[in-house]
Image (cartoon, rainbow, N blue to C red; front, side, top):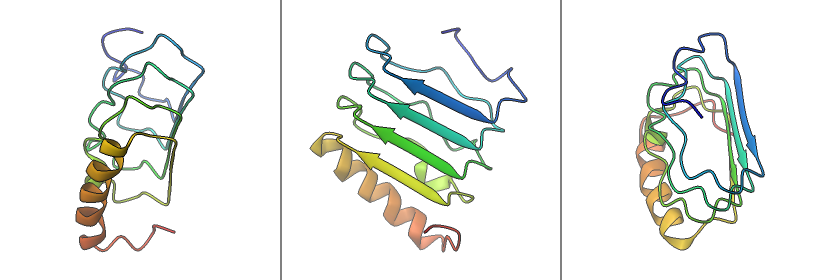
Length: 110
């Protein structure tokens, strides 16, 4: 992947599936509406999501080495959040971020 994806202004959906060797993704374009990362077993870190103000769907599945989702607490448009088969450190970090998100009264989250 290039060092930055932020120049892809019109990109609405970002999907990574079965990227076995990929360890990290550069900063994502701010107009993304959906991020889907599945079965990226070597994947270690997610770029800060706080700039993705219209992101409404986030899926992270079978990315066992990811410890945190930076910026999750700033996703005010988030409607769907799905995370599965992640490590225990990850769940602790995400719970802390989600508690901040809920305190900001997210009416759209279901």
